[in-house]
Length: 122
Image (cartoon, rainbow, N blue to C red; front, side, top):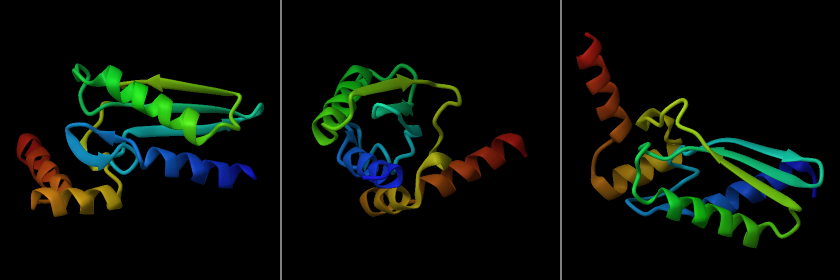
């Protein structure tokens, strides 16, 4: 399996992990900032959460770690780093996540967020 195929497999695994408060997977929600396949093979994931003081942070981290370990047994080492720089905002949602959010909640969170930003700055 080449690096690109492995990266697609990582994304597929991450698409099965959900934020417990928002029924959109963490990849399409835009919580994954970086994926690196390193020699070994090793996996490095840089991710965030929707809020810095998320009470479910530990659970989300454990879910990501468990899913990656189970779904990618070929990885010798998996490192997950959580960052809040930059902080997550709705504009980070991928098109698939945006559509899913619209189907579930009946509105476009990105459009609503962008309009709120314009009001605050304008």
